[in-house]
Amino acid sequence: MKEIMETSLWVLFLTFLKVNLLSTSGPASVGLLHSEAVGRFVTESQFVQAVGFSSVLPGSDALQLAMYIGYAAGGILGGLVALAGSILPPTVLILGVVMILQRLRREAWVGKFVEGLTPAISVLMLFTAWKIFNTASHIGLFGWGIALASFVVLFKDYIPARFVLLVAGILGVLIIR
Image (cartoon, rainbow, N blue to C red; front, side, top):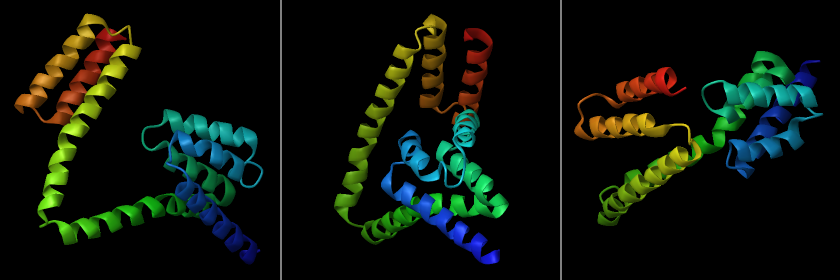
């Protein structure tokens, strides 16, 4: 019995390691995870329920899905094993990048590279905001007002960002609906 449990936990770990190495996580990994997990660790209805829960709850969908399937397959230990298999690849990758950047931090080209990323990320965020506002046609003038006020307050550093986001969200819920 113990040997079967260890083997299934090992298979569970390898499955989530494989899924997270072969996909970019999030919605892209759901299809691969479906083919790997349904019939092996969970039923079709359990998988659908897990996807529903993970998309409704706050936090990372991929990690919640991993913990749900792991828990269904092996209890609390199974959930922890699936979580470990899910977070190991990105953790190792980030640690590797940090180690490389730590060695190269005094190089001039690294500083210029980071300086070049700043406007690119800013433009990416602006395009994302534009897409959100274009798809949410019900926002209207008041929604644009909230966005503009939030931008001005954040730009001038009057209030910490977390409070600006909290107030903007509450205003959106209460007024825009």
